[in-house]
Length: 138
Ligand code: ATP
Image 1 (cartoon, rainbow, N blue to C red):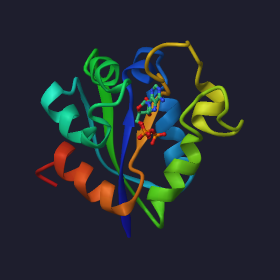
Image 2 (cartoon, rainbow, N blue to C red):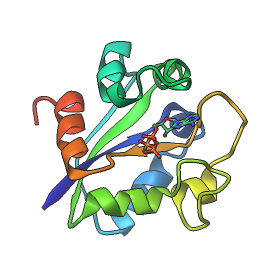
Image 3 (cartoon, helix red, strand yellow):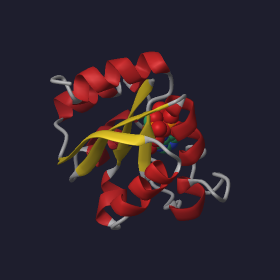
C-alpha cells in the first residue's frame, strides 16, 4: 500500500482543526502510521519546499510554516497520495470545492502565502522524498 505525508499547517493547529482533519483522513479509510506535533526548522522546510525556491511566495511560505507547531502524519492506504489531495481540495481556499478540507474550512486572508490548512504530497515520488525528510527513522 501507498503512504503519503499529511501536514496540518500552523493555521490549522492554531484554529483547533487537527482533530477535524484527522477525522476526515480516518473516515476515508486511511490508517495513521505515525503522528507528531512539532515546529519545523527552516532547514527542514527549505528541503521540503526546494521546488519553490526563488518564487515570490517562498520566503513568506517558509516563515509561515516555521511560525508555530504543525502536525505531521504518515498516512497509509490504497492510492492515498491522490486520495488525500482530493480530500484537501484546491490550493486556494476560496476556489476549493465544498466538501474538501480547504473548501469547507479554509479562509482566504489575502496574504502573501495561502494559509490553506493542510499539505499533502503531490505524487508517490514526492511522498517518498518528504517522508524521508520528516520521518527519517521510519
Ligand atoms: P501543498 O503542497 O501544501 O499541499 P499545493 O500542492 O496545493 O499545496 P504547492 O504548489 O505545492 O501547493 O505550494 C505549496 C504551498 O505554497 C501552498 O500550499 C500554499 O501554501 C503556498 N502557495 C503556493 N502557490 C502560492 C501562490 N501563488 N501564492 C501564495 N502562496 C502559494
